[in-house]
Amino acid sequence: MERKTKVNAEEGKQELVITREFELPVELLFKAYIEPEIVEQWMGTKVLKLESKKHGSWQFETSDPQGNVVLKTNGVIHEFVPNEKITRTFEMENTPFPVQLEFLEFEKLTSNTSKLTMHVIYKSVELRNQMLRMPFAQGINMAHNRLQDIVSKLKTVHS
Image (tube, rainbow, N blue to C red; front, side, top):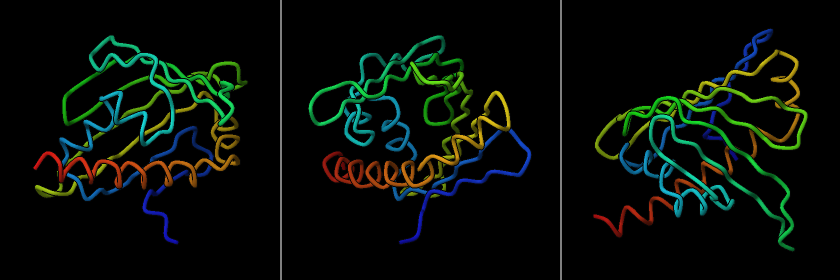
């Protein structure tokens, strides 16, 4: 199956550029990143905090089926422009990975399609490459597929 989410990792650089086109209006795509109830559904995580504003912070917690917490992530939102961009930090707690910087840009393509571009910057080339060795691209593609499915259903409810 084709991965609709593209992960571009240039050799020797400490960044990734992730792009995905969605069959969703840009307003709904943006909403999928800022509304806790929607984030929880497509990311399969619990939103402990999500302050969608400049200087806001966020904190997510992912548990296994037995309820044991397996991953905690958090960060701070540095820039927040509704339906256009979110600049934030991303940190996985209790892992060897240091904080990373993420630039999310939301672009309207047509009234019913939009594009997400995520520019992720890591502390070093080695850390970025270590992240790429994990099933990262596959995971983000699956999450984006869920986002498309879940938010498409919302679209029919809201229209």
